[in-house]
Image 1 (cartoon, one colour):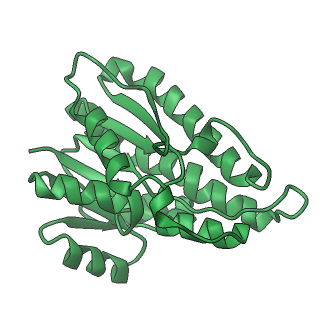
Image 2 (spheres, one colour; image 1 turned 120 degrees about the vertical axis):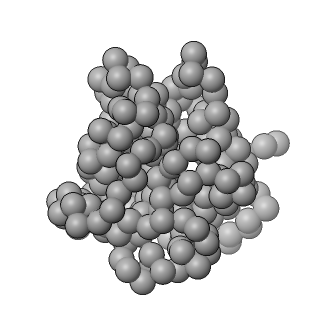
Length: 229
């Protein structure tokens, strides 16, 4: 049984990953933005432990973590949380930029930093659920793509830095996936949302678990997942 901490387990890809890990009996630690959300996650995943910390306020995460019990052993850290606000460069305000950079890049870096001692001790694995936008930037996606390009840079640097400690690092880049975030994106784009056109979160979860379960003599560094034909 492995011990894993997941961000964004309340919906979408994070929830699909949490369900798969829960079904096979792994020890789950779920990050929640506040106490109310923590209670919801504990009801959804009986037996899971929760840690409260607001990813939108990454500068407060160290203080929040210091006042709670954290996993003594951590075999995996899965970053699935994220936010998106579309807009042209001419429309995006500093608040829109800062919100996406904070949640999608700075917070994952800080959560990783705070949990590195446990990950080093167990020769653990960090998985960043990135995006196709972490590999290319399209019109109206500047802020989100910048945050996800930064997330890939974070993963690449972390992999090189922590190789001596045996920590593996994987970036997963899903294309459009049928999640509440995708539904929001369609509203922002003014398009009708057709869930069946996109990747199921469970398919991305399979990709994440494939990377996690790879024997220790190998490492998946980057995986791109596209909608099927």
